[in-house]
Image 1 (cartoon, rainbow, N blue to C red):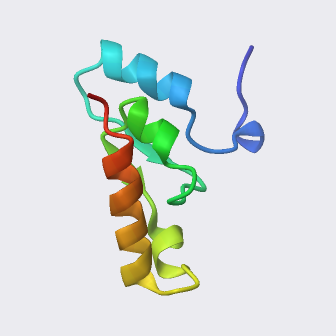
Image 2 (image 1 turned 45 degrees about the horizontal axis):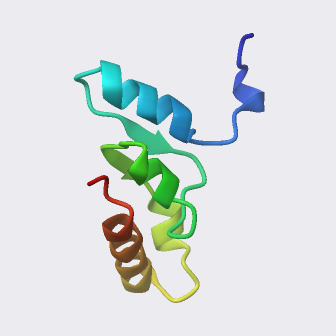
Length: 79
């Protein structure tokens, strides 16, 4: 069925995996991404993560958020 904008809840790993397999154009995962939930998106092949809110609104500050993202991304890189 159709997916309407009001039903969308963020990036979906299954769509990113499909995109990575069939497309040459890079993919950008967007929508509610945090260091805690970015792993499956990275593992699925997301080329970029849109994380502006997670960085600038992180309770410990942007530097801590970037470090947390770097750790999460490194631990979920496809082999």
